[in-house]
Image 1 (cartoon, rainbow, N blue to C red):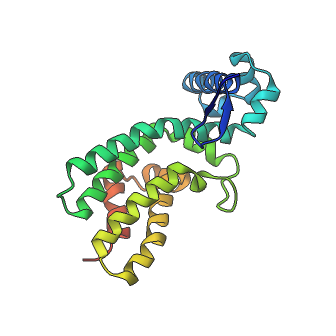
Image 2 (cartoon, rainbow, N blue to C red):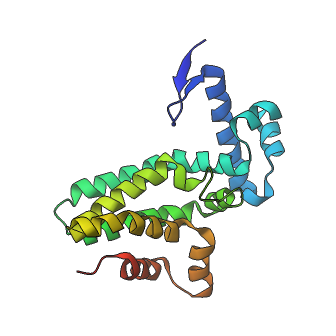
Image 3 (spheres, rainbow, N blue to C red):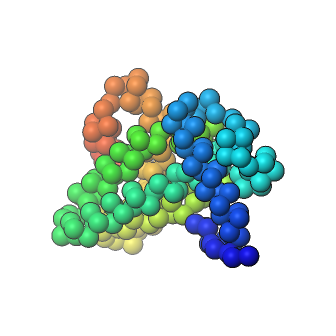
Length: 203
């Protein structure tokens, strides 16, 4: 039986990889039709024609499944970020960072229900959450690197890890973002401006 590796580098049998593909395609279709909240794991198993056992061996809950869907689609987002950084490498670091935050926020708006699905699970910084994924680590590395360019001294660089964590958390945490958007009235552009004013190091 042939094997492959999944996105986390784990060896995966071909039948398991096919089950994963069917689960994700079915879940995305059902989420698009009915919304994440209205779709159950049992419904996904039935529609994908996969037993509940294989489904729950792969995903403990709907939160895990939503996280896998987000990680799949983040590849396209990071492609845009990396192309932008290569194309605009001569721009000041603060402008490059603002531009990629805009790309991340645009993605965040498109995937708002999936992110809510992740948070509806066990959104606990001490356990398996979005903050402990390759997606988060890659985003964090990019942002810390740009902060380091903006500050340029060792003492400030030590603080940039914390600053990047808080910035990313402010962007992806659903209740924070939705509160600012729906109750404070910030548009995505004005929300971005406030993030920059709050988190960018002073020149």
